[in-house]
Image (cartoon, rainbow, N blue to C red; front, top):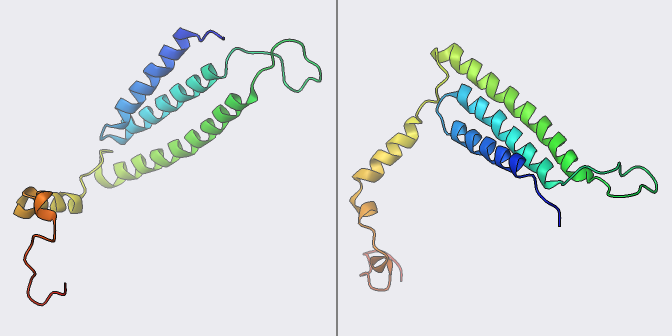
Length: 145
């Protein structure tokens, strides 16, 4: 059984934790930094999961342990995806800065009105699973059985 490098594992976990924390912020600049930190943490964890380095798998009859190319390919793919996502978030932050003078994410007006209507609706607050059984309710006029 192979030994896992605990320092790299803890560093990757810390990067993922910090990245997730920054992704939950309202500022798009912090979201951008969180995205990059999260991506670096996940890439580091992929490489740690790949195990120790070995000989190139291309060599015909290499002696000893061969390196696994799959984690390296996943990390390269993650780098490309992160680059595209970073460019998109930078464009959103720049456009938000042009329109509003800040890069904070605004509250959704429609979502707030739905939440307000649900709070005012007595039937949604008093919903009980026992009263949801239609066999005990009296039939409404004009409704079919």
